[in-house]
Figure (cartoon, rainbow, N blue to C red):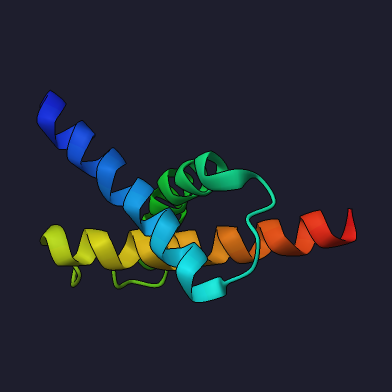
Length: 87
């Protein structure tokens, strides 16, 4: 994997974390840095979930990467809110 490809993947995940916070709303329990990290992890989770559901091959390219990162980031940001509120 080329270095620029990894950098692009990390950047898309980080941006997805911030966008997910905008959709979910509220105060970030782990701050903006936490949302960036959740977005990067959400990119991995979203890609995995879409692959399990069979949509991984149909959502290829940059748009598919952005969508899967956003879906995963939304899930992780929502879960972080639930854990932080109850914990």
